[in-house]
Image (cartoon, rainbow, N blue to C red; front, top):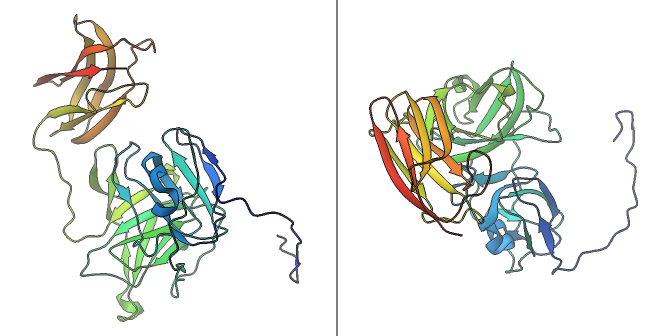
Length: 330
């Protein structure tokens, strides 16, 4: 706790062990919930949280994190660990973000062996109080032993590669510059290491992996990077639009309007009532090709909740217009 401290100091702290059935309150709307795991048994994350997993967006721990790929219920999970490695054990602190407010109790479904994190031998870096997770996809035919991330030549995080999906805890909060990756191959010697400046990065807005570099000051929650040899950007072939769920109850969850653009275009998406009157304009502007999601919460232009019934949503571009209907039921 002090840079001038020469010897270790013992701190006496009194406390008590919480009852296993203690109820924990979790706030929604992506607020950070700091919670401790106080069961004596080591469990897998999914067993420990049980049915509460359906309402969780991300779980961050000291050395790794799991999260949904998009900020919407039902999106695919990014999990950089095998089932045997996804463990939580006595004394762990977790930062959990939820879609909705809820109460839960730690489940007690037996125990599994604890998993110890492997430390890098080639890369060295300084841990800080918080990190940004970078998930990296590798070609199964070209797995390095370790991967490191640097800014201006200084290593900001590294990890041992154990599978085709790995995670690096990168300590770049407050930094500036561009990220550079280095792949370390123990059996090839240091002369065969690869410094990578160009890579594919997943864009949650377009749902495409785009060739770009990561600028540290972007302040993103996470990054999904691919080093796969056959990775390429996939552009939709047709203009389309749909919504889900349909019917939907905005008091429980809004409806997601998903649309695909095969080329860059000026696009407008508008919602009308059954009389043809404007209810809400949810998209307007020039957009690049890709697949987009926008959530409508059942409110009009003035922010007022609208009544039950059939509504129409219209996607308009310079060359084409698509009209579909949805049902709002409370």
